[in-house]
Image (cartoon, one colour):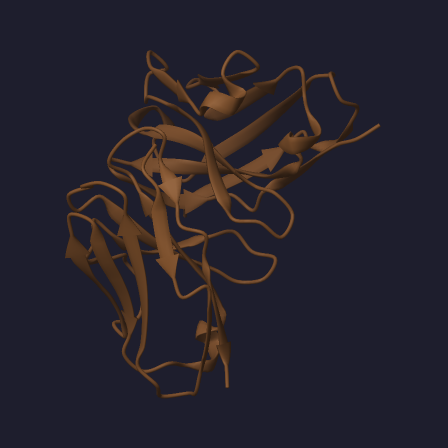
Amino acid sequence: EVQLVESGGGLVQPGRSMKLSCAASGFTFSNYGMAWVRQAPTKGLEWVATISYDGSSTYYRDSVKGRFTISRDNAKSTLYLQMNSLRSEDTATYYCTRENWAYFDYWGQGVMVTVSS
Amino acid sequence: DIQMTQSPSFLSASVGDRVTINCKASQNINRYLNWYQQKLGEAPKLLIYNANSLQTGIPSRFSGSGSGTDFTLTISSLQPEDVATYFCLQHNSWPNTFGAGTKLELK
């Protein structure tokens, strides 16, 4: 059974950093691209970043470029999102999701990030 | 960025009704359109990928159609467990963009 379990969220002050993790199991992690998608409270879904199966390619939405870094450790089957210079508009539930060619097929339960002083 | 215009934003229907939800892309996205269901407090669940392919384990009352810029999700006979918010997602180009969602409730 495919499982994606996010961790590392919580309350953080504006301008500070936070690192999210996503532990994957139930599939060969190194065969799939992975992504982070977020959802602000009572809002819709917003793609954040994607990383290729081997980590050689990364893609970001404009509003997080230069502040967020997506990475992966295939030996540990773990995806990461390093978030620096956090802003109030980054407040959201962050979902880890598996990219299966042209769609996101499995999602974690999400982790809440609140950016507030 | 490709804009995804989803309609309606809210839908009230009765058990057994046929329900349709639409997504229109601001430019051609071929068939790279996916549909998700999100129930309150849960993660999104993939229903349809590549415009019309039913994800494994999803009931056959769900179907998708369309290509290019216009797409439709159809629930052939609404069930109580279908109460949720539905989103479309274009996966044709970066950044991947979602529709704003359709909240489906029972009448």
